[in-house]
Length: 322
Ligand code: NAP
Image 1 (cartoon, helix red, strand yellow):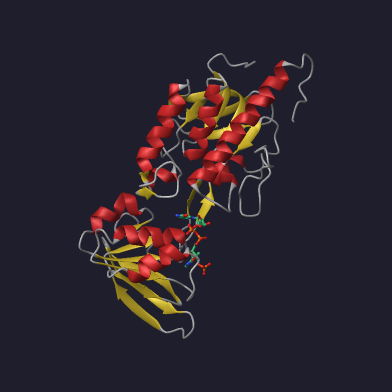
Image 2 (cartoon, rainbow, N blue to C red):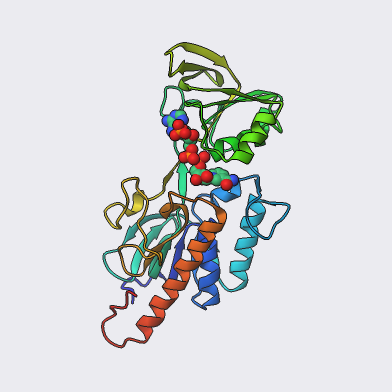
């Protein structure tokens, strides 16, 4: 089908290796489609950066994010999926087989399952970029350890901010959660745990306006949004958890997307291009759970399988976009 003999030709190419990608791979592998998964930057996706996942069924005591990712991978590989440490840069969806250019070369894929996930939103304030990795972080599991017995601030009022702030209390001497309102989006259980925690403090109705430091973060400039009063807050670390943006830049103008940049899928995980599916956080601004992403990935693979089977049964043409 390909006109370039150096292409790696696959029936199902999965972009991304989080819960959605590896679940899609498991289902496509069990359908004997020998899927290839391109891991992207982070094997296991964002879930692998989560210290403990307590709401994935089957693990009553919780399971480590990296451990769950490894189990997903093992299970997919057991049935014949191939997981490649490779990164896609460009896609050509103008004709099938779809072309995907990666670090290692080019793939020709009869179907594509996009599970490229989402990335943390930045505050976009002075000092943030310069001090990232020097006190500013977006990943508690990755960097929490560096703040042993140090003072840490966290920005955000959702589940992520609370969950990660609580995680950082293992290391830090104190964790101050700074939120722009006086109400939180985080669930009641997390809120209670945080409010009851002796190391946790709260600064409400307040935004961070600048992150200050030369080689490393030393203090934050804060502003109370009600009174406009400005203040300084000395801290060794700042963790920012204010939401995510989907990794869809590669598909701009090629797939239908929402105003927020999420790939639009129907209830069968079909995108606007036949044979191209999307699953997990790249297509889900609402739930962002391991279980929902895994479910979407499975659905995408089932639908890709039906699509390919339908084509095999149609001798002419190929308008089998069921
Ligand atoms: P989120 O629920 O969208 O919360 C983002 C928080 O950041 C909000 O409190 C928001 O403030 C604040 N924020 C946004 N932009 C800001 C800015 N520029 N400056 C200061 N604050 C800003 O995001 P999330 O916590 O990442 O969670 C996303 C989804 O994943 C949710 O559906 C959540 O339930 C789910 N999730 C679930 C779990 C779990 O079940 N254990 C764990 C993590 C995430 P406002 O409140 O004022 O808008």
